[in-house]
Image 1 (cartoon, rainbow, N blue to C red):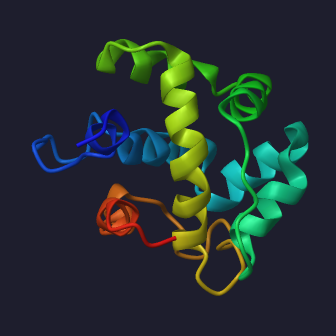
Image 2 (cartoon, rainbow, N blue to C red):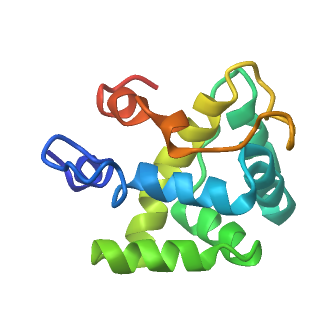
Length: 142
């Protein structure tokens, strides 16, 4: 089992996703006000084309951990990454590299119709909405 698998909340971890990258992605989504809030913030801070590909129905464009970190920091969300790194006992760059793999899938998973839910229209985010994503990622499905 790789370190990324364990961060994804893999086989040996029964923390309910709280310490996993899925949990961190969920935290980012909650603090940003849902999918629309997070995607809007990331688009405003330099990841426009990539984020649009995550929401859309085509292939997800990759982003680097460094690009994601810069966008999150500029969008006022850097503290979420810092806290997660501290809890996991790893460098923030490790969390960002993992999130750069997980977040595109999380956004894609939450926007199956190619559109982010509009705020205020039953779009309240909860971690249960990402249920099954870790299994999908660990199963090698893209």
